[in-house]
Length: 82
Image 1 (cartoon, rainbow, N blue to C red):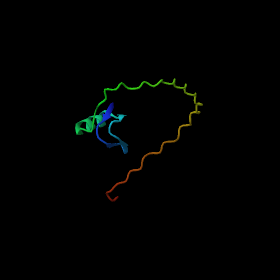
Image 2 (cartoon, rainbow, N blue to C red):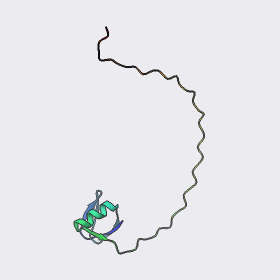
Image 3 (tube, rainbow, N blue to C red):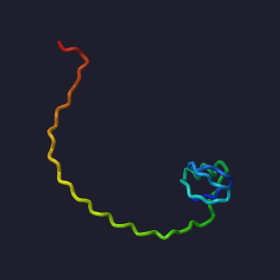
Image 4 (cartoon, rainbow, N blue to C red):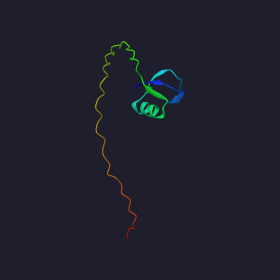
């Protein structure tokens, strides 16, 4: 969510000065607005031209491994054996 910072504040360890516009999570925006340090932005969000995602490369298929022999689980008894 885009908010306008009204008072200087630290957001996720980064300083944000009064009068700046920042993109924060919904939870952070609600907290900042509730504390009176920010308000919902009236400024339209700048639209960045999205680059097409490159096609994923085909990974070489690994040969299936032979099934390993399954050993039975060991149990430990707390009672002494007689």
